[in-house]
Image (cartoon, rainbow, N blue to C red; front, side, top):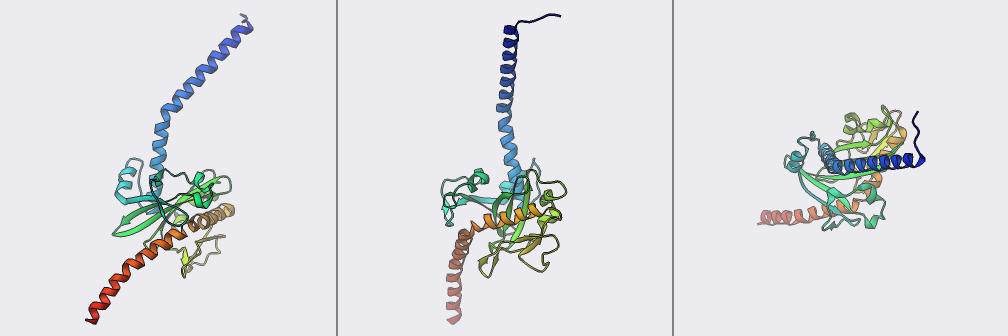
Length: 252
């Protein structure tokens, strides 16, 4: 049996480690643009799903450009922040900042001549992060669509938040009641009032994940309250001159 000196073994091991590290580094750098592109496409698919537009990896970018008319970020006072790329915002990092420093993304779409406002939500489930998008109708209260996803929730239990059955419960629910923000409560499965505009059933056996969705909606959507109110005030101001003009014409 041939024996090798310690120096030989050390040099051979060093060369192998350096070579493997170099190969892995090159592979990572080569694949990084592709991974980033896939993440962007997946994000666009989720945004489209929130407005009930189904897409594939092949047509997501085309449909996104077709339906998403505008995107921007607002601050905690509801004012638009100039020169901020809403699509590039990482909600996990953003929510770690004080509220007054956060940039809150907003995406606008138009379907059948009706405008929708789409906002991201991010929170914590049982085993890891959960996230999604909520699309609101033009009244900025009624939910037009919703999509949720997760990283590591339990299959068949908490992972059910990304199913159609769970998400469709939110359609038509409202986040404001008599002008006050109330969000949509995710209650223990079977406890939600089917006639309520402000309640949905949680996942059976996924109590902690369901509570995570409940907290996520309340925490994230409440940050947009000043923006929602500002938009509705602006709409009222635009409608009032038109109404006044009609009254004047009728009086004539």
